[in-house]
Image (cartoon, rainbow, N blue to C red; front, side, top):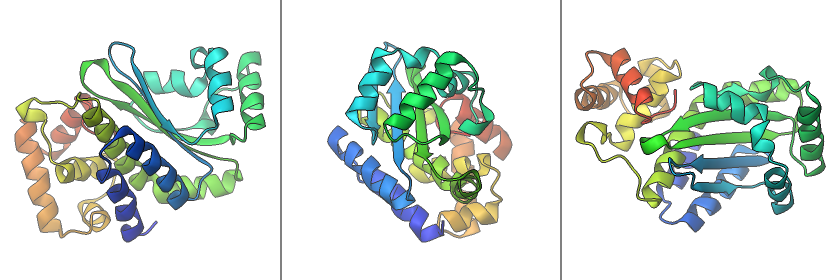
Amino acid sequence: MNTTAGYDIVQTVLQVDSVAALHDGIVRIRDMLGVQHLVYHSVNGSGGQTASLTYCEGWVDRYVTSDYHRIDPVVLACHRRVAPLCWTTLEWDGRRERTLLGEAADFDIGARGYSIPLRGPGGHFAILTVNDSCSTAQWQSFTAEHAATLMLLAHHINHASLELAGAAQTEEACRLSPREADALTLLATGCSRAQAADRLAISEHTLRVYIEGARHKLGASNTLHAVVCAVKQGLIAP
């Protein structure tokens, strides 16, 4: 995905000002990415849930009534890790797991998926998922091309959801600007400074300003330390 297209996707999230707008944004971004489904689901520390997704109601009802979240390899893996995961790396050999996949296919849920675990204040946990039924080769090409954009997207959707719920972090050290969080997010994905600046359509000098600003707010000794602190505090997805 080129820089302009990635910027347009993030801008779609930045314009969100209500739960309904967030859902509409999810649908628009799904279409911009050219995938079958885009899903954002979060659970706060009290167990309250929020979801903006393109799955049909029939599948959501089946998933909930069958308690599939208890055995879903994607959900279980995301709870144990901070890095994104491709569904093809998970074990689907159990009887219930195979049933889950089979029923999902009946509701037009593809076997290809890429999920990003997200965390926030007060035990907040969320997952952003893109899903499709394309070939393995096509999916590998898609995830390789869009990985950095998906990380930015996950961060912004999660932050927007937290703000709408009135749960965004308020501590002074945690009030990163959107650009500061974007800069650290891209560095966390392995982008060089030049690549991160290109993704954000800014100069490397401006990128350094954002990085230094984030480092100062987080009390970090260097850029790597800033990335680690931001991940631990749930400010960015690695």
